[in-house]
Image (tube, rainbow, N blue to C red; front, top):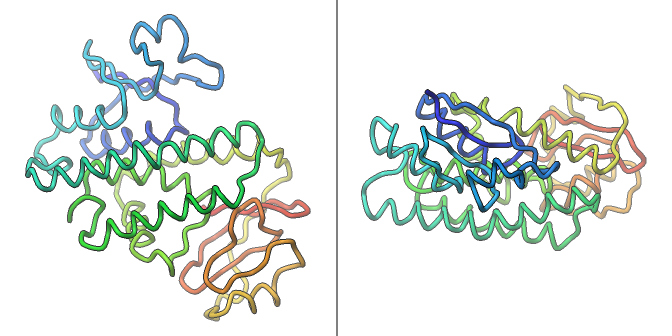
Amino acid sequence: MAPKLYTQDMSPTCRSVYLTAAALDLKLELITVDVWKNQQFSKSFLEINPTHTIPTLDDDGTIVWDSNAINIYLVSKYGKDDSLYPNDINIRAVINQRLFYNANVIFHLAKSLILKTAKRKPFDKDDVTEIRKIYEVIEKFLETTTWMGCDTVTIVDFAIFSFVLFLVTCEPLDSIVFPRVSKWVQKMKNLPYFYVMKKGMQDIETFTNERLNIKSEPMIFDELPLKEKEVTNLTDFYDNNVPSTSWEGNDDILPRSKWELPFKTYIAKDFIKKRTVTEKEFGTISTD
C-alpha cells in the first residue's frame, strides 16, 4: 500500500516531498487538504496531525509531518543507497544546516508573500530586498559545491528549489548577478522527475492572478524582440522598447517585481525565456 501524503499542490514544502518520492521512484497516494477552506482544522485531520500542517505523511500508521522530517524518513526507509541524504557526518552537517536555513528563513519569507497575495496586497521594495538576500546566500552556498549540499543532488536541493521556484515569480532571478543559482535552477529543471513540480506552479500562477484580479486573456510571445542582439545596457533597451512607466530602469538587474512590469517582453544577455504577458495598463509578466 502506497504511503498517504496529505498535501496541496501549490505548497512548496509539499512539492519538495514530491521530488523526493519521485527520485526514489516511490508512489504516493495524494490526499488534497484545501488550506484556503480550513480543511487542515477538521477533526479528522487534527487527529492525524494536531499541528494542522501540510505535508503530513501516513505510512501504514507511521505519521510524520514537516517536509524535512518526511523527506529524511522516506530516503532512510525507501532509498536504495544514501545518496539523497549521505551518511558522511560532515556532508550531512552541511545538508542539515541548509535545511534549517530553508525552514527558518526562506519558508517564513515565502509564507508572508503568499499571505500578502491572499490579501490582494502587492509586493513592495522590502519584499524584493529580502528575496534578493536569499539569492545572495544560496549563491554563496554554491561556491564550493555543484549542488546545494555537496556534489550530488540531495534532499536539500529539493527543499530549497521548491521555494526558489516560487520566489522567482515574485522577483526574477538575474542570471548575471546570480550565475551559480541560475545554473543550479536549470540543472534542477533538467532532472527527469522535474515534471512533478509543474501542477503546483500552475496552481500558484492561477491563485496569484485571481487574487490580484488579473482577468485578461494571456498572450504567449514565442519570439522576443532583439533576439539576435546581446543587450548590454538595460536602460537603452527599455528606452527603445518599453512604453513609459513608473518603473525606473537599472543597468544591473531585471525589473524589480512582476507587478511593476509594463505590457512588454524583456531580454537581458543570457536571460532569454518565453514570457506570458497579460494585457493591462501596467500589465504583468511571468516566466514559464
